[in-house]
Image 1 (cartoon, chains in turn orange, green):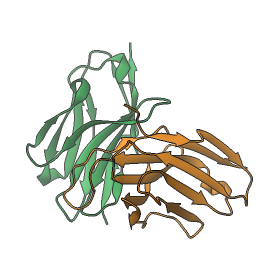
Image 2 (cartoon, chains in turn yellow, orange):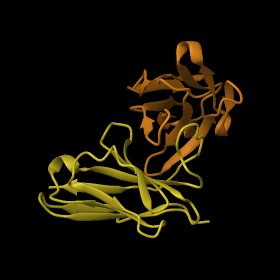
Image 3 (cartoon, chains in turn purple, blue):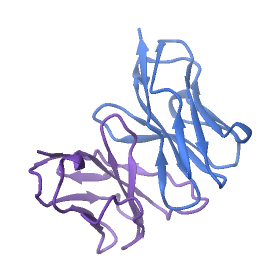
Image 4 (cartoon, helix red, strand yellow):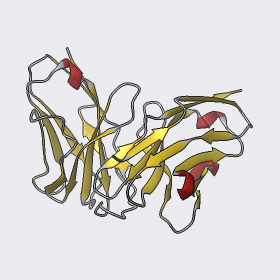
Length: 118
Length: 112
């Protein structure tokens, strides 16, 4: 079956512009995660959705970053007034069950969107 | 604060020799621990996970990891490295909330 897909695969934008990154999770997966991976580092947690609601957005670096999942499936990560420091690979992952304390759920990762801010 | 530390940024082994990738965690809770692998231009893939059912966990491709609570460690091992094992490996923890914490990664090189 289809895995997690992310579009676009690459995005080049100019400083100050607005960008949207899309994630299509595996069908039926209720949990969805966004991460940011900078060069030479491990993925950094941004936000977790359970269904339509953001259960934990503590990883969003500032109010320029926002994510939605209006129908509990596709999610969009939105970045306003992009800065050069936002350049990274943005990863999305989904899981069939809720996360949380004691959870052991495998996350299925997409290939990522490489964002370059000039 | 919860954290995951991978003790080696790079590990180089010869094909057919054992692999050891080290991971230590810090958590106030009994953590859920995972190892993921990332091959170039491919998505992250789960190797194995610790669920408290057994301290020695077997994963795919001959990898295994042992959870040692007294040492707060979850080291990844494989008896015999293969060229196809060359990749980036991440130790990952859920530490009581929804937040997933990744280590910085260990790049494994396998020499012929």
